[in-house]
Image 1 (cartoon, rainbow, N blue to C red):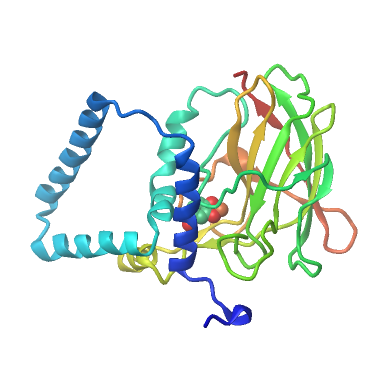
Image 2: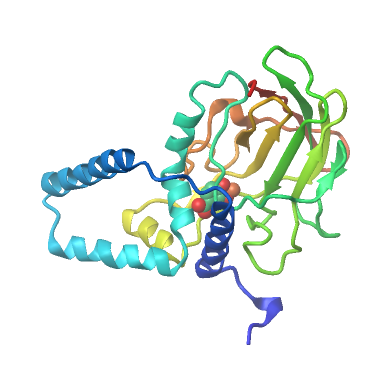
Length: 284
Ligand code: DHB
Ligand code: FE
């Protein structure tokens, strides 16, 4: 029997939750198969792999190690984690290359739609004794031409002060540090939260095994995840980071952009910090 109080976050448990989350999202957005496109993309992917095998004279031992590892990625439910860390940043780069507004970056595996709706000034759902430096994250949502976007939506989700996400790690309230903020009639919002901690890729699963085998580190810098949207405008999915924080210059997921680094300042009240960040949305 699992002891709830001491239950630990494991790669298999967070991987299973991330896989389940992805499956439920995918059910509602199946795309039709374009045979020609599949042919081109898969042929080129395989050709690139064949080329690597030839150039590096990949051995049977290495080929079998790869097979075992791929099988384990599935067993641990870590396909969403693996792909979002090592591939999504390039998909995002291509998807958003023509945007003029706020820079996007990867969504990652831990978004859950329909977080509780909150008013334009709100405190994210959190525990009474939520640890971490209090942060007031405020700003305005505007169009590229500078006009304010009334009733814009700012969805926010983040890790806690230990780097854990609600619904993917044990013992956290369902919607902890997640919310859907509806900005006011001038697009302004004020969100009271805490500064998240850096996030560590689970070290006890297949992705952790790869990281150790390659001599990499398993860390992402501390970040807020956001989706900003407004009627008639394109939704942007992005993340914001903290200047000077660990791993900002060395993100395992390659998802930091200079425009996305915040510089929170002390408010003068205890340990509290505040920062202003404005979202700029492209027309739909
Ligand atoms: C992963 C986790 C994150 O919090 C994130 O923002 C991106 C990727 C991951 O574990 O794959
Ligand atoms: Fe994250």
